[in-house]
Image (cartoon, rainbow, N blue to C red):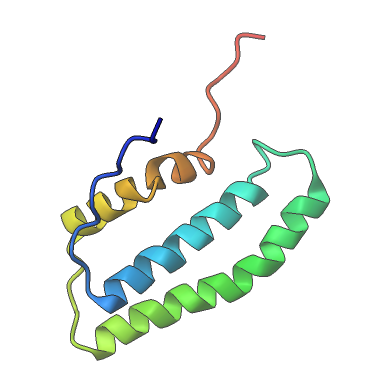
Length: 102
C-alpha cells in the first residue's frame, strides 16, 4: 500500500524555497530546546549551539531575497508551502503544552 500523496508545493522562487528551508531548520531546533517539552539539558544545549548557525543562514536567505528585489513576502503562498512540509506539526513543538489538571 502506497502512502497518501502529498499536495504539490506551490511555485516558489529559489530564494523563497531557501527561506522556507532555513526557517523550518530554526523551528526544529527551537523545538529541541523548548524547556516545556524536554528535560534533557545536553540535547537542548546541542540544539542551541546549532541554532546560531541556522539563524545566520536564515538571515542570509532573507538578505538574499531583499538584495534580489524580493521585498514582499507572499505569506499565503509560503504558508501553503509550510503546511505541505509539515510546518504546523514542527512549529507546534515550540508551543506550550496544554495545561494539565494534575
